[in-house]
Length: 244
Image (cartoon, rainbow, N blue to C red; front, side):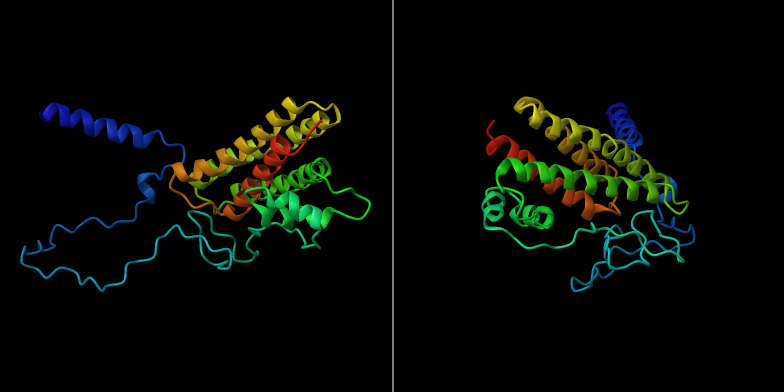
C-alpha cells in the first residue's frame, strides 16, 4: 500500500513539473511554519463564516496600471500598455446589422467592422468578410507587438515570458494565413478559405489556453478575447453565408 502511494505522489509531482507555464517553487510565497509555533488546539474556535475572503492574486484590471498581473509589472516611468484595441467606433449599417446578427458575437462584429465600411462598399457577406479579415490582421499585429513588448520587459516573470512567447509565435502565423484566406476568396476556393480561418482561430485559442494551463492571468486578455470573437465571426460568415 505504501509503494502505491509513493508512486502516486511521484506521478503527481512529475505532471506538475512538465507544465510550460507552471509556477516554480520560488513563486510560492507561503511562509513555512516556525518550529517554535504553538500547535493549534483542537478546541480552538473556527474562523467566523462572516470573514471576508482574500481577493485572488491573479485578477487583472486594465484600469489599475500599478497592479502587477501575474508576473508583469510595467515600469513605473512608463504607462501600462493598452489592453484594448485602438479601433474607433463607427456608424452602423442595417445590412451589417443583419449579417452580424446571425453570428454568435453580433456586437463585436458591428463594433470592429463598421468603422471600415463606407457608401462605396456593397455590404454583403463576402465584402464584410474581406473587410473583417483586413481588420483582424491589423488587430493581430497589434496584439503580437504588445505580446513581444511585455515578454521582453525585464520585470516580466519567466512564467509569463514563456506564455507570451507561445502567443507571439502563434500570432506571428496569422497575417500570412489571412493573406492566403483573401487569395482563396479571389480564387473562389471555399475549402482553403475555411482552413485558413480555422487555423487563425486555433492560433488564438492556443494563446488563451497556455495561460489557463499555467494558471496565469494574461496581461492582454481583453485583446485575446476580442480576437477570439472576431475570428469566430469571420469563420461563421465564411462557412454559413458566403456562396461562391
